Length: 205
Picture 1 (tube, one colour):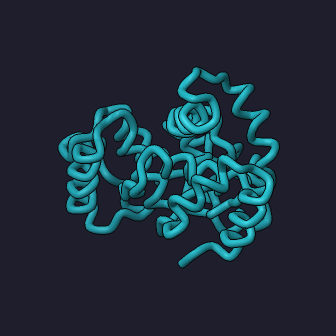
Picture 2 (cartoon, rainbow, N blue to C red):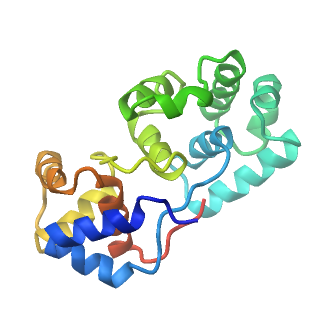
């Protein structure tokens, strides 16, 4: 389902930024959609780190089979050795167990996120081992559908700006941040379309 803010965001971005207007016109038939359960989204983000899409899918499938149900309680109780047999490194296995424990204890609590701003949610998520700011920002975009996230550590965003705004010339994080000011309060939408300008079809993980 298309986010409620999407059409208004596209209209505003197109009206104030000719480059963004062109990208939206090229890719306007697709839009951001949410990626399911918060816990599973975060667990899968840990699995996906620093490995190929194909390898990540294989490992995730084995985790699902071993767990039966990928829930906080189940992952918190699983042995590290069992998770290692699924293809996870020892560090990632520890990260997965830490995530399960923090959800189970309530240290990470999705029920109150609707009342929190983006930075407060990021601060909560990065207490989990293996979750840094970039992963938290991806979660805000793909799970919570927050409309104004600008992930400055994302290489796809940087490359999209270089390609569409600088004719391939390198840009700094500061330059991207300054450019992003013209996209407020729809920086998520602008980021999404810059990604699509590089990779037209979203990669489903």
